[in-house]
Length: 291
Image (cartoon, rainbow, N blue to C red; front, side, top):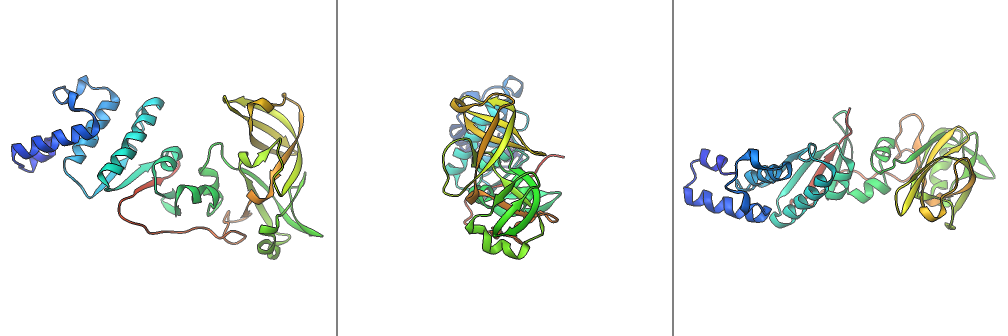
């Protein structure tokens, strides 16, 4: 931790003071006399952060700092880095391929694809108002369901997926009317499809259960709707059997519509949120997929 300060010729008293201060912040005072080989992965990660803290930078850059840690330790270190940011108040840029890290740690997130910025926004806006199909599919687990089809007008406005039809809610209708007979992709998140309940505006869709994944309090159902495969999030007390025919309730107010050719949402409905500005004391998480 002291190496960088020694190279800059800081006085020994100042080096000792900064190292002890950083060690207290990170909770590693008891490790100061140990050699690197005697430290665990998480402890080495804290020491690396401490080496940056002692220099008192105005901006921290973390480049996938948790990628080599096991799942339990990653969760622990996420919390520690977030607490550290709150305590130091320095702008932090955190680069990750893990959308969970970006969503839980970032005040603003920059989503990249092939080096090109797709959207800059808060975690909730990325989730609820994605700028395009890529962002919608990248943010959220399980991913958003996508169904290709066409907008048709027969009395009202409908999304026609060949095997089924879903009415377009009044919230979207006016913006989508100019795009009748145009190919679109409908997006709906697993939690916005239910087996029970009654959303204010809902459409019924018949489906067959193909896979059930119990996750404790909730379960993921993989269902077949015609040629389309969908994921549904449901409570475990209402799990249907494999092969069972079920009626899905799709919340029409939560649907997303993307251009069938470009994948963009702004040309159809719910204009995308763009680049925003804020204060300096933020975690900006740069998220992009692997590959």
